[in-house]
Amino acid sequence: MKKLLTLALVVALALTMSCAFAEGYSGDLKVWVPEAAVDFTNAQIEAFKAANPDYAGMNVTVEPVGEGDAAGKVIADVEAAADVFNFAQDQLARIVAAGALEVVEEGNAEVVKAENDAGSVAAATMGDTLYAYPLTMDNGYFLYYDKSVVSDPSTLEGILADCEAAGKSFYMEINSGWYQTAFFFGAGCTLTYDSDNEGNLVNCNIDYASENGVKALKAMINLAKSPAFVNGSSISAATNIGAIVDGTWDSEAAKELFGDNYAAAKLPTVDGWQLSGFGGFKLLGVKPQTDEAKLAACDALAAWLTSGDVQLARFEALGWGPSNLAAQQSEAVQADVALSALAEQLAFTIPQGQYPGDYWSLATGLGDKIISKELDDADDNMLLGELTSFQESCISYAG
Image 1 (tube, rainbow, N blue to C red):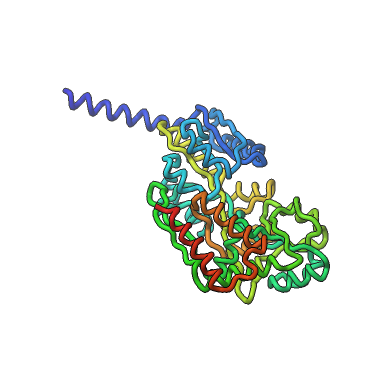
Image 2 (cartoon, rainbow, N blue to C red):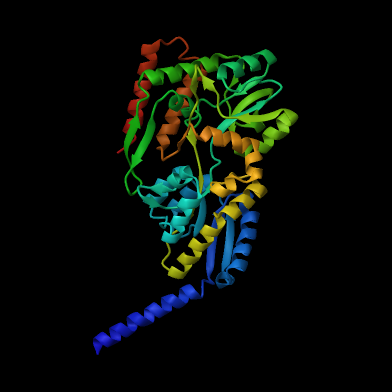
């Protein structure tokens, strides 16, 4: 009799779960996206509910939280965090370590891997596990320039010569650990961190203290010697500008500044080798849920918001570059000057993984020494010593 009751209970629970999925979800759900995307996201959620009647009664609140701030807020209070949230891919390991990301639902994972570019899928993956939905492939840097000033954007030497001749400035933020990697990675150096399954940094892979590292450091020192050089990366804060290393977030400002002379290209070569650096992606994550019906609703909404059609609509509304392969092939995306330059540059970059906070301060210090001319008279041995100290510090941050 007891076994029959147990079996009956199992059947009843199964029927209850089946009904929950069949009836969708009509409770509350919170979404975090950058402020500029709030209105767009609200409109897309209404379209989602119209296309999915089982979720028509769902109450979704969209709050403005930037992708750079989302990880910190989620980790600080997972329970109070949004159920679906936009974040930058370099924060993936931290969020996984905090237990704040649900693995992408198996069926959705197959679609994500088939429909998005490989770089974005890799950025959303730890080990063999897909933890997030790719949203964009537009978080990287490249060159904006004034066509009336720069005649050939393919070499740094040529860009600097043109800017100097015209009395214009070339902007690049060499005391930033993000932009600085353009030289080190381009010269053939490595600096990455390995994480365990909980997202903890366990190993540093670095070879800055090398002939290639000295080559990169000397190229930055020579850049800073140019009278055209200005340390910076924001078009809106730049003056008398001939060219700048910046990203898609400043494309409208670049168009306004350069007008008919607006142009963009991949980063140039220096001394014959191609500048590289970080490429980045925006991702959409789903927080673990105790309510299976709510989890299904979160997965369904995340899949909708990162689908090819919505990525293309987001590009048209906000200018965000899609990671979806079909959306990338649209005429409008292909015709976008900034996204085309970034797409070309991404072929030479690595996805930005997780880096310790101390790395960014360390890189700023190295760049400041270049800008202040402290390393101008250093020979190769002295530069190697500088990089050896840098490398040892980076290694100490792991484990």
